[in-house]
Structure formats: structure tokens, C-alpha cells
Image: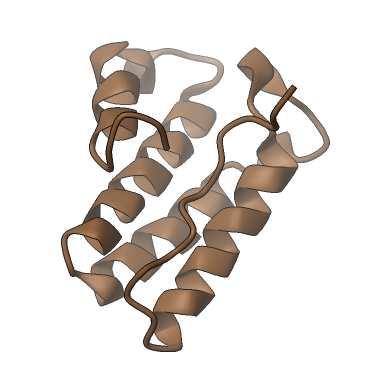
Amino acid sequence: MEGGAGAGSRAVEGTGATRRRPDRALWKGLAQIAVGATHAARGNPVGAASLLRRGARGIEGYAGQNPYGVDVDGLISSALAAADQLDDGETAIISPVLRRPA
């Protein structure tokens, strides 16, 4: 995520989007993935993997869609891959990608 490990979670949290309907699940899942990446960067692999998986599950209902330009399928895949990396003992993960390069 661009802007450092905490930038994504601050951006999502700063929108107040986690309180809005009907896309609350999307915003909550995105925040969990961002916080998971932050935990990974700060050396908490167990918490990071848990949050990355929880966030991926949270946005599964948007699979096949690209709400707000978010590459949901790619994000789910990259979040789960990062969680697997952490489970395998890797400390440097490939951060989940919010959008595909144009």
C-alpha cells in the first residue's frame, strides 16, 4: 500500500465509511486488511495473518465486482497469500494491492 503500512487504514478509517450502509462490509473488510498489513510491518505475524484473512472473508460478498475501483478479487487473493506467507514464517510480505495498475 502506498504511503506506508498505516496509510491505508488511516485513509479508510478517516472516511467514516465503516459506519455507512450499504457497503459497510466492504469498508470493514478493507480496514481489516489494511490493519493486518500494518501488524505485519510492525512484527506481529499472528495478528496480521488473522486480520488479513478476516478482511478477505469480509469482502468475499463483493467478489467479481470492482466497487469504488477496488480490485476485490485481486485483493482477496493477495491478502490470503500474505497471510500464508506469515504462517510460513516469512516476515516480509507482499502487501495486498487495492487496485490493479492501469
